[in-house]
Amino acid sequence: MRENIVIVGGGPVGVTLALALAQADVKATLLEARARGAFYPDGRALALSYGTKMILERLGVWAQVAPKVTPINTIHISQKGSFGRTVLKAQEHALPSLGYVVSYG
Image 1 (cartoon, rainbow, N blue to C red):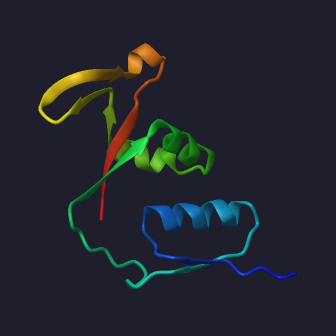
Image 2: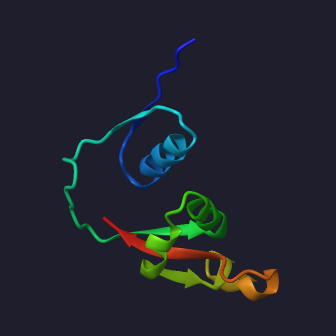
Protein backbone atom coordinates (compact mmCIF):
# COMPACT_ATOMS: atom_id res chain seq x y z
CA MET A 1 0.00 0.00 0.00
CA ARG A 2 1.29 3.43 -0.93
CA GLU A 3 0.77 6.26 1.52
CA ASN A 4 0.86 9.92 0.58
CA ILE A 5 1.39 12.49 3.29
CA VAL A 6 0.60 16.10 2.61
CA ILE A 7 1.26 18.71 5.30
CA VAL A 8 -0.77 21.87 4.82
CA GLY A 9 0.95 24.91 6.31
CA GLY A 10 4.61 25.76 6.70
CA GLY A 11 4.33 27.33 10.13
CA PRO A 12 6.19 26.02 13.17
CA VAL A 13 4.11 22.84 13.51
CA GLY A 14 4.07 21.99 9.80
CA VAL A 15 7.80 22.52 9.37
CA THR A 16 8.58 20.50 12.51
CA LEU A 17 6.41 17.62 11.31
CA ALA A 18 8.02 17.72 7.86
CA LEU A 19 11.49 17.58 9.43
CA ALA A 20 10.55 14.70 11.75
CA LEU A 21 9.09 12.70 8.86
CA ALA A 22 12.12 13.38 6.65
CA GLN A 23 14.47 12.21 9.41
CA ALA A 24 12.38 9.02 9.68
CA ASP A 25 12.73 8.49 5.90
CA VAL A 26 9.03 9.14 5.36
CA LYS A 27 8.24 11.04 2.19
CA ALA A 28 5.90 13.99 2.66
CA THR A 29 4.88 17.09 0.75
CA LEU A 30 4.72 20.42 2.58
CA LEU A 31 2.29 22.97 1.13
CA GLU A 32 2.71 26.64 2.05
CA ALA A 33 0.89 29.63 0.56
CA ARG A 34 3.84 31.98 0.95
CA ALA A 35 6.76 31.95 -1.48
CA ARG A 36 9.82 29.92 -0.47
CA GLY A 37 12.22 32.08 1.52
CA ALA A 38 9.67 34.88 1.94
CA PHE A 39 9.71 36.57 5.32
CA TYR A 40 6.73 38.53 6.60
CA PRO A 41 7.49 39.89 10.07
CA ASP A 42 4.32 40.17 12.12
CA GLY A 43 5.55 40.10 15.70
CA ARG A 44 4.18 36.70 16.66
CA ALA A 45 5.51 34.80 19.63
CA LEU A 46 5.16 31.17 20.66
CA ALA A 47 5.27 29.65 24.11
CA LEU A 48 7.07 26.32 23.81
CA SER A 49 6.79 23.70 26.53
CA TYR A 50 9.86 22.01 27.96
CA GLY A 51 8.73 18.84 26.16
CA THR A 52 8.77 20.72 22.85
CA LYS A 53 12.34 21.78 23.58
CA MET A 54 13.28 18.11 23.99
CA ILE A 55 11.64 17.26 20.65
CA LEU A 56 13.52 20.07 18.91
CA GLU A 57 16.77 18.81 20.47
CA ARG A 58 16.12 15.31 19.09
CA LEU A 59 15.46 16.81 15.67
CA GLY A 60 18.76 18.68 15.87
CA VAL A 61 17.34 22.21 15.58
CA TRP A 62 17.26 23.45 19.18
CA ALA A 63 20.77 24.94 18.91
CA GLN A 64 19.46 27.28 16.19
CA VAL A 65 16.38 28.25 18.22
CA ALA A 66 18.04 28.57 21.65
CA PRO A 67 19.71 31.97 21.14
CA LYS A 68 16.29 33.49 20.37
CA VAL A 69 14.33 32.22 23.37
CA THR A 70 13.38 33.65 26.74
CA PRO A 71 12.98 30.98 29.44
CA ILE A 72 9.76 30.64 31.41
CA ASN A 73 10.86 29.89 34.97
CA THR A 74 7.67 30.65 36.89
CA ILE A 75 4.00 30.41 35.96
CA HIS A 76 1.26 32.00 38.07
CA ILE A 77 -2.13 30.38 37.58
CA SER A 78 -5.16 32.30 38.74
CA GLN A 79 -8.85 32.50 38.15
CA LYS A 80 -10.59 35.74 37.31
CA GLY A 81 -9.21 38.37 39.60
CA SER A 82 -7.18 36.34 42.10
CA PHE A 83 -3.51 36.48 41.15
CA GLY A 84 -1.11 33.64 41.89
CA ARG A 85 -3.48 31.10 43.34
CA THR A 86 -1.14 28.38 42.09
CA VAL A 87 2.51 28.96 41.27
CA LEU A 88 4.67 26.56 39.25
CA LYS A 89 8.43 26.97 39.47
CA ALA A 90 10.92 25.18 37.24
CA GLN A 91 13.39 24.84 40.11
CA GLU A 92 10.84 22.90 42.20
CA HIS A 93 10.50 20.37 39.36
CA ALA A 94 14.26 20.07 38.76
CA LEU A 95 13.92 21.63 35.31
CA PRO A 96 16.04 24.38 33.78
CA SER A 97 12.75 26.06 32.76
CA LEU A 98 9.08 25.23 32.33
CA GLY A 99 9.17 26.37 28.74
CA TYR A 100 10.36 29.13 26.45
CA VAL A 101 8.96 32.10 24.57
CA VAL A 102 10.31 32.58 21.06
CA SER A 103 9.43 35.22 18.48
CA TYR A 104 8.79 34.14 14.92
CA GLY A 105 7.30 35.47 11.77
